[in-house]
Amino acid sequence: MRRITDNIKAFKINCQPEEIIQMAEDIIAPLSGKIISLNIKAGQKVEEDDEALIIEAMKMETSIYIPCDGTIADVKVNVGDEVEEDDVLATLE
Image (cartoon, rainbow, N blue to C red):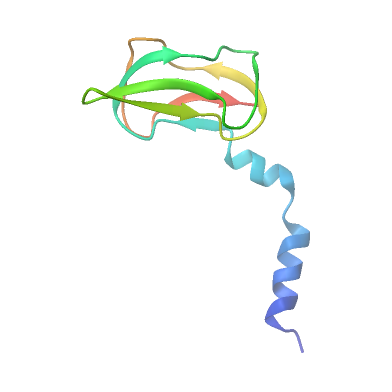
């Protein structure tokens, strides 16, 4: 007879790190606003919690941080661009 803990162990064994990294590839805008600072460029190596860019909304500045170590594959915004919530700002490899 299988127990619930057997299923949990099976899930942990089957969960590959690549699947977790896959989920963190895009840097997403958490709110609508204007890009006022861009600290990343394509090909740049970055570390988790590096400041990627700053969005200004309603005269408040919000820093957007890198979610995991990697290399910036593509930057989809420029300083001065208006972005909407959930827009892809950049892509990590």
